Length: 270
Image 1 (spheres, rainbow, N blue to C red):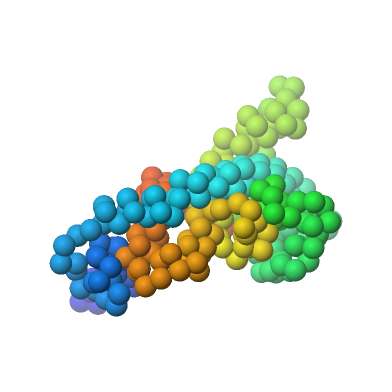
Image 2 (cartoon, rainbow, N blue to C red):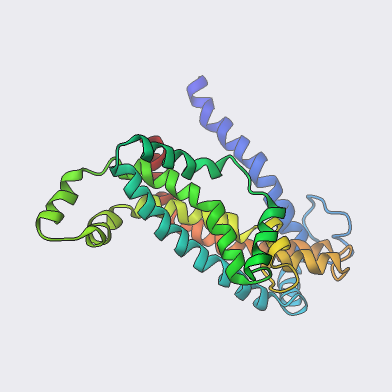
């Protein structure tokens, strides 16, 4: 009996933990201003979701903020994946005390938060404060540890005989990595891509201190319009903005769900 009830209990738990907040967001985004003043779980009398989406899209200048987010997220993800996977490959194939120390230092960023004040002061000295390049550099330093952690464990499961065969055929280190190792890293790199996209896409804390007021991303834009009073007591518009901001990540998660799970189990557990 307990085995039969376990799946039911899990479904009920997921429905409560995820379903109720999700319904609150959707229901509030579909209401009029009068109905949404006090957010609750009641469905809207008449759905105004499309009208709210059109209003938010124009009034909050969502397209410009979307482009700003892409300017930060795409280069960050590409740089973190390339540099992190190359570093993880070297750390996984070199067995020495120095390598162990470097690996520990490389993944220490997972548990050691960066000093925001120091980072901002350093960017000012380098002339990168308030620029997209400076923001990319901050994210690169923060999330490189995540890629190194996942990819190093995955590389150790790849037989070294494959790399040795490529070297015998005359391939150099970069050719071995690009033609042999990199194609085998697709599951774990898919996982790292989703995680980093999630972190960077929704970040407002570091972006506020580095590029706040100079370049708009979707979270920064939402914070700005809400703080300026444009959405004061307009919960239907705020929740509509949240839906628009979350849709790209929801689509990516739905498409790459299997690769995410296989990458986590293949990299972190092994």
